[in-house]
Amino acid sequence: MMILMRDGATETEVEGVIVKLHEVGAEAHLSRGEFKTIIGAIGDRDRISQIPFEALPGVETVIPIMKPYKLVSREFHPEGTVVKVGGAELGGETFVVIAGPCAVEGEEQMISSAKAAKAAGATIVRGGAYKPRTSPYSFQGMGEDGLKLLALARQETGLPVVTEVVDVRDLELVCEYADMVQVGARNMQNFLLLREVGLQEKPVMLKRGLSNTVEELLMAAEYVVRGGNAQVVLCERGIRTFETATRNTLDLSVVPLVKNVSHLPIIVDPSHATGKHELIAPLSKGAMAVGADGVMVEMHPDPKTALCDGPQSLAFGEFDSLMRELKALAPALGRKI
Ligand code: PEP
Ligand code: MN
Image (cartoon, rainbow, N blue to C red):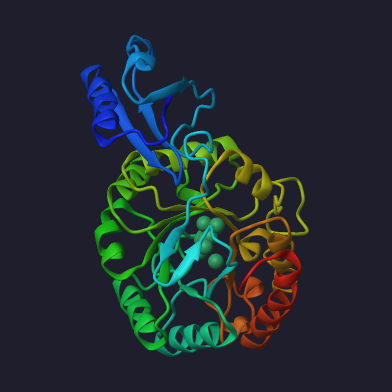
């Protein structure tokens, strides 16, 4: 349920509603827009509905939220959320490009990638230090040494870094080094991890699970936001279908669909969606055209020798071309890059 306050409602009036909610054991989540203050009430529906909200000073009206997700819904927060990661802003006018290798493999590989990403115009650097691999015999990532190299990449380029946390036991360590914490597709419904990620303050990138619906993605985001961290960016990275020509099937329809129902920014990962480096540029342009807040792409100094996801990684020259194509397209779509 949402309690919409009158324009100009005072702090005392807002506080009065919150106190009433706490009295019935409900949580109050405050959303202050430019014009409206909305209080999201989360708790026992019957007990909450006993409160005579419309008789309380400062209350304009009460609106039930029918959707199963509340805090991430656009009803609760009509203005789009802007998530700040270092100097980059996701959810604003600017189309944000996140680039870097699938996995951090060593100093030379990571730093050269970060420098190439920056030189071409990327504003966030990626790199996995903990890799969720299908085979236990595949490279599992460098762990803390990888995190240290990400911190070095930030120092060398001035760009913020995003990296995946796979295990809740590593969360604190990952947060010490990263500017944004990624929850990967395989952990999208790891509710324990989502809860813990919601309790810390770093922005979160939440990737859609391999076989998860949009509603499940938004419910996963609800776990994080409910913990107190509203700095969440969603990421469409392709879903499993009958098609085998691409690694996954990119569901671009999700972007405008999510924009309609949620205030959270959403980006697209054409690398994991397709598994093919030659499809990254066309689908990145598609992502911009359908209104995504950015893309995340994998790149590598020598994709053929990459320890992880080489076939879907761009060589530096290819990344440079991609950025030039996106820069050419942006003005036609009213976007900055
Ligand atoms: C990744 O971005 O490194 C990754 C493992 O992607 P996903 O979780 O989407 O498979
Ligand atoms: Mn990868």
